[in-house]
Image 1 (cartoon, rainbow, N blue to C red):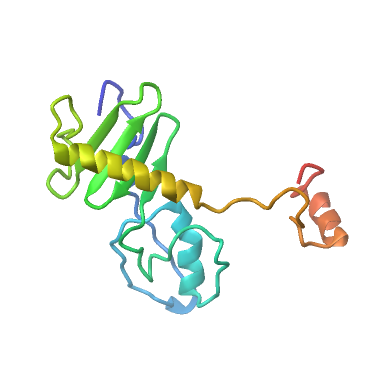
Image 2: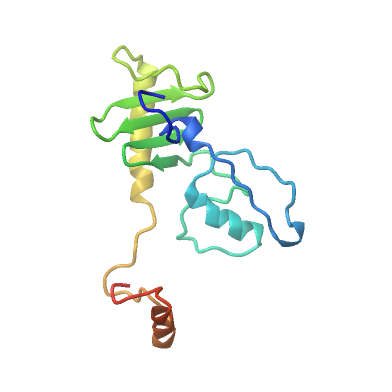
Amino acid sequence: RGSRYGGHGGAFEEGLVVPLLMRFPGGHRGGERVGRPMSHVDLLPTILDSLGLERDERLAGYSALAGRPEEALIFAERPETDTILHWPWKMTRKCDDGRIFLYNLETDPLELLNLNHANRGPEARRTVESLEQRALQARSSRFQPRAQGEQADPRSEETRALLGDLGYVDDSD
């Protein structure tokens, strides 16, 4: 799309929708298909869920196998755009000039009609405002790193030294 050739579709669906194939030992969950949208932050919860392992409640994302809550947003953040998806609505904001593009993926799966144009109707305006408000709330509740002074690394000094020798940690960790 646009004036450039190549690339990966930017914030359009053809650039964001990527198949994920997982193969577990012994054919565990073999042939299972999940067609719901997910995000990169959903990968670890999905893997833990498929293996029957517990996850830390602070971990972001949802298991694709258990399902994403209806109210949960999906974020796609790229250097040039920020995108929020809440089916069927998809809103993309260009970082350079702040322009907002709004699509209804149910009625316009090819994202040809930007509903957020100069003559947008009240439904589009309400949708943009709602998505922006919900995005602010979701971002404020994201996992936060430990406060300064908290025990950030529970590994022993011996383990840290071994990891350092292998090049996995340094003094900044």
